[in-house]
Image (cartoon, rainbow, N blue to C red):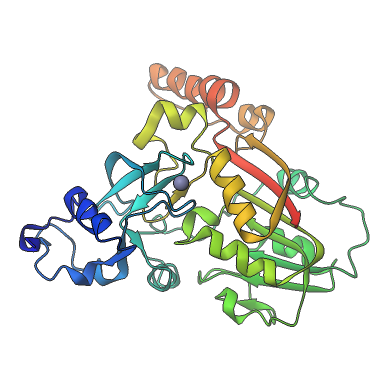
Length: 331
Ligand SMILES: [Zn+2]
């Protein structure tokens, strides 16, 4: 067993080795002589595990798409972007463990959030109402419903529901979340004797070690006929296929998962949810919003033309639908 030559950047041989032994999870701490000279000290290798199997369908047929840098510009830490041949899911390998991710988010680490990020302050409220009307009538009586939101962020959605519903629970490890009686840092702090009718997990699953586990956990907290509303990156999109590892959604250790139509289906089936509606969309507001809010000031006219082309023509009209919207109900 020649593990002393193990290199974190090229674990293909190790993957074959452990696959032969039928080991599912390998912790980085198992490699005592791993080459760490290029790795920033503040990356804790014990907090990662090498993925031998697809995190969604458990297939061992994986393709290496590329090596990618994390969003921390000061670090040379490289991770692999892998694709599952069976379900088409893309994911980051090695995968940070959830307790470590929680710590990174709590401390506002630049491995998971952009520098100086305080939540999305410039929020478009027309867009918010449009989002909510995807799964519930805005004017309906919600006073008997319990609401649970995972990944509250600065609380735009949460604040909309707070005064309309019976109990309004929010979960977020980030320090900039709103304060309140029902605001907690981790899903494990939500009492299991409350059953929820509306569950929102918007732009969250891609940040977690195990998205299926999160769906199973909220399923246990869901009432009969509960609604679940989710959004996350779409690796079936033309933008993802064209740009591959350069796709703007590939942002480790912030984003760790990129979903295919098939991986969503498997994830829902394995967690007790049924898909009600599913479509791909472009995350920014409408073309009208783009035109009226576009930053036209630019000294370089070529750059302006490029920005118009990129934002309006390329992303908005042609290939921009790189997010999934999925609405589900309890199965
Ligand atoms: Zn898979």
